[in-house]
Image (tube, rainbow, N blue to C red; front, side, top):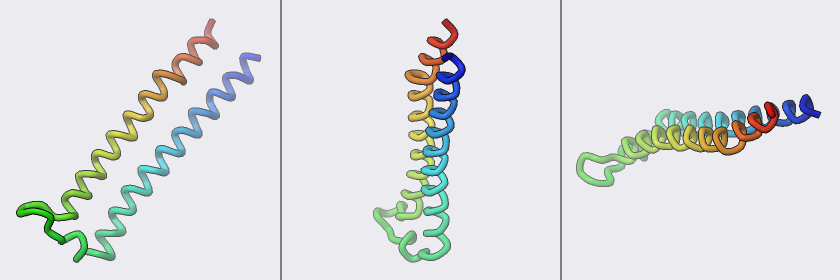
Amino acid sequence: MTDARLQTLAAARWRIQLILTGAMIAIYFGFIALIAWNKPLLATRLRPGLSLGILLGALVIVCSWLLTLVYVRWANTHYDAELERLRE
């Protein structure tokens, strides 16, 4: 019984890791592809001293923080709680 619950928990952790990793890869390589193939778009000035490229680059960093936050919250609320129940 515990072995099956542990395998289910491990599968859930693996699934969330793949989803979040895939999201980060898509965001990062999407930005890199935009740099490679559409530099004029990224050079668009939004305000003096701020281009679309700088804004999107900062958003890539913010997205990585947010995805990390999503994982930490998931791990603290679901993974750790279930692991604790399995230990009992």
